[in-house]
Amino acid sequence: MAEDLFPLLIAVTPSPAERIRLAELLDGVAPLLLVADFDELRRLIAVPQQRTAEPPGRAPAAVAAAVDDTLLIDSVRSTARCGDRQVDLTRLEHDLLTCLTTEPVRVWSYAELHRSVWHDERLQRRADVQSLVKRLRRKLADLGTGVTIDAVRGVGLRLTHHRRPRVGGA
Image (cartoon, rainbow, N blue to C red; front, side):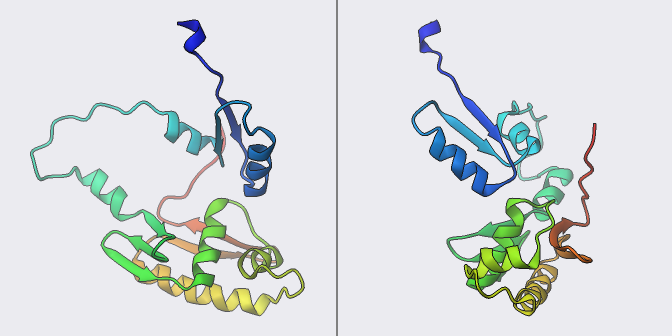
């Protein structure tokens, strides 16, 4: 039975570039689980809890509210969805929103966002990012989600969920 066990490597890092680098370094060593933070790791390895029996056709109100409040990004269709609402995203809007969601608590500089979305090292125009953010904020508001893009004065932008703020610490 002991010979059936195998090691599982778990790496926790908020940086997408670091996760790629780890995947390349550890390729073939052992199965590898890469996550952005400990909350994501907990969700992945948590044991599902038994639900109490609900009458057929009725979802618990708390579950329905949580599902309706979740922002889902469909990269295949280039759409964003929240509850029963959906908006189409341009390629740039999709790439910006995806970039911001990779590290939602991180404040991204305008230059970093420009490089990530436009893939251009030479041009780093703040106005391009601001214009794109303005359009994306409007679409997120149309969805009715609590998620928005906040400006951090003198630093850059970050993705924030105003209805369910995350509080860190022990």
